[in-house]
Amino acid sequence: MKLDVDVLRYLSKDDFRVLTAVEMGMRNHEIVPSELIDRIASLKHGGTYKVLKNLLKHKLLHHDSSKYDGFRLTYLGYDFLAIKTMVNRGIFTGVGRQIGVGKESDIFEVVKEDGTVLAMKLHRLGRVSFRAVKSKRDYLKHRSSYNWLYLSRLAALKEFAFMKALEEHGFPVPNAVDCNRHCVVMSLVRGYPLVQVKQLQNPDVVFETILSLVVRMAEHGLIHCDFNEFNIMIDDDEKITMIDFPQMVSVSHRNAKMYFDRDVECIFKFFRKRYNLSFQENEDESDDSEVDSDEECRPQFSEINKVSGFLDKELAASGFTGKDQEDIERFIVEDVEEDSDSDAEGTEDEEYNADSTNESNIKDFDSVCSLKKEEDNTPDCGDRQIEHQAVEKDRHFERDDNPEDESSQAGCDHDSEADEQIEDPELMKRLTKQRQRAIQAARGRKKSSTSRTKYSDKGGRSSYKSKVQKQMSSW
Image (tube, one colour):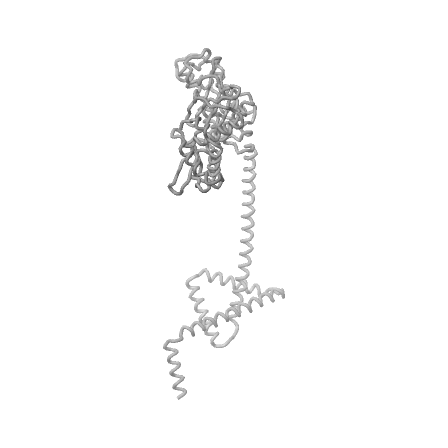
């Protein structure tokens, strides 16, 4: 969308108030309801709807009534909010021509009060040419949903932070002036992109300078990730200036070596094709010698010593979690060791508990077996003897079916005999109490079983015959 700054002159305070209300509503709404805009703007006499019509006419807002009546900001409305803030701060007073277009940004000339010309970069993520932001950039981090305006704001903040840090450490980068929303204001570089330069007076010197910048940035803990002829500016004196920094990552990133080798390969490839540079000390016809000499000239990621600074820690670059990577790894190792120790202790406790429970269960089972044996030997009425014979028959059939139970029962009998030989009075008291409880429980079960059989016979032929017999006896 073309930036028409002439409309900015005729916008009133109410217009910017409504634009700000829509921006505030978009923090938690994809389409901001008109009622919410009216409440946030709080204009008198229903003036919000009149202002919305004016903003729609200039394409600063987009109206959507598919689910409900609502509005959202366009990139042009977001541009006007950022430019208005910069003008109120006194950063610049006028906007000039467009000097650059990229896959994720537009660059314009801006003028200060004293006539100094600066560069204004407006990030525009979400274009058709660059929509794979979630896989190509790390602006989202842990977020699942996103808005293009919000992503553009994150990219601008990240580029401004990298530009300020690199400038403080003496790197040839533009001077970062200010940042607001998705807009970054910087000094204008008096030069040309390297891709537009056909000839150089000293291509070897320029090549060594560019290559040293890549190595020096890696020593400071950063990798450019897009260091090619399109992001290198060169002036008439063949001085180099780097641009475009939102995609920079840390040297501790998992793909840092791949990004570093790709940046180096882009530089070698461009200078070999454009300026016919040969990176050989001794010219040989064999291909193996070319490969070997190429590898000797090419810097290796494993040979870089990160001793000059820690910009990735200061700026929390991609691939760095905010703390020192070594401390994090040490913390993880300690956690793993503690978990393993706790697991080992837990298994030992479980084994000890299992052994103790098994021993207690064996003792209880032995006591119950001895109780059953005594119960069988106690004399009682005829019904109990009959029931005792039935139980013995059942046990006999169970022994025939399960020979293992015979061995266990024999063991129980042996243990009961051993218990009887014990002369400790306290143990004998406990055993007698357990036997009495077991006998009472067995008697209760027998009563319940007989009651069940009586209940099942009610209404049957046996009950009918018993009634007839009673009547015959009464007659």
